Amino acid sequence: MPDYQSFNRETRYGMPAADQIVVNRHYTIGYSYYFRQAKWALEIVDPDKTDVERFDNFRPDLRIPELFRADLADYEGSGFDRGHLVASANQFETEIQNSETFLLSNMSPQTPFFNRGIWKQLEAAVRKLDDQKSILETYVICGPIFNFDVPVVTIVPKKNKGVSLPIPHAYFKSVLTEDDKGKLHMWSFMIPNEATDKPLEEFLTTTKKIERYSGLVLWERLVGSEIEKEKGKVRAMWKI
Image 1 (cartoon, one colour):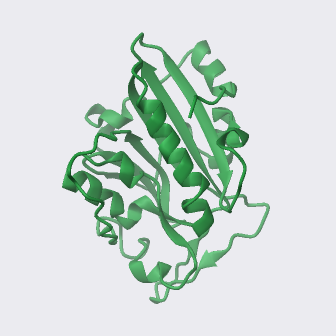
Image 2 (tube, helix red, strand yellow):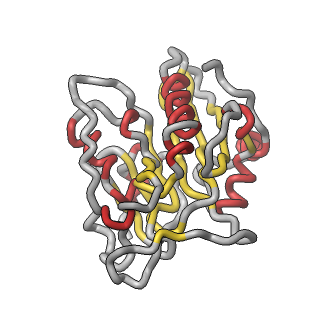
């Protein structure tokens, strides 16, 4: 297997395991054949806007084996949004950069009020964090969470593939910043896949809890007692 971490900037601090690593020009995902969607998506936030417009060219990712990949028809009439993991608004510098965020391998079935509400708010808040003058780079990893002590609802595909598209119970997002003094700071969120009026602060949690619920090891290239403390704390929300 190629050493993706040697040449993808966003994987500098590590990336979790997955059935298939899908490398794009500006982000990397770890795909799950079992869930027919990404287990995680990893990016460096790049909100510098040019005259590029949002593409909205949703399409299947043909790099994923047909048996396991989602198609446009799978979402039609389902009542669920094709929710971005890597946000379109984070990748606006070039046309191809924005276009590749619309691959269905970067989508996960989200309830409309979640996708257009609290999830969108969190995406905007991360961009605001990245705008701070002291922040050099902002790394984000996010993905679905399934709670196996409650039923998992699925979208049954119209095409006869014999595989359905499970609806996540919640989503996580872990944000890692590097400031101009070389210090690293970490925030992690876990939000149910449903409408909510609660503020983002209500969904802050420890990175260690995210790891337990997701079954992933986050930022594994960072080691040492200080990182362990950082993973075990709930850092206060930045000003939004």
